[in-house]
Length: 103
Image (cartoon, rainbow, N blue to C red; front, side):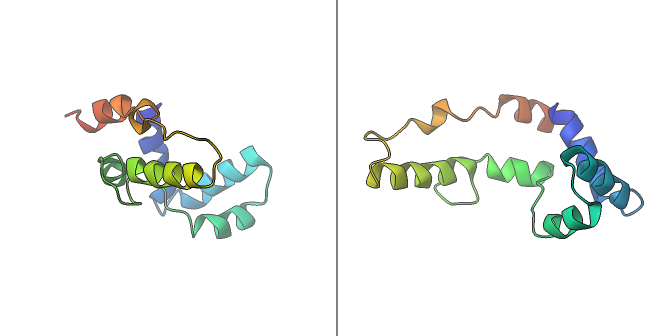
């Protein structure tokens, strides 16, 4: 599935197939392709490098770990739940790393 994501992203990012990719996605979620196209312009779809960076353990918001850690602090402070969560239990990048490390 991880490999397919990157193939789909290549298809989406290819100017020759971009419009078809948007049409396929729009049909799947039952919206007009021009509406979805407008929304996707503001959406960052991460490729291999972006995923690699996002999965690094940092306290910054450009890291999945950092984002979750900041959200966790927010929820504890707002008493959504009482004790901080162990972020490592919620994130497993094993499959991503396998694909990124392939030669």
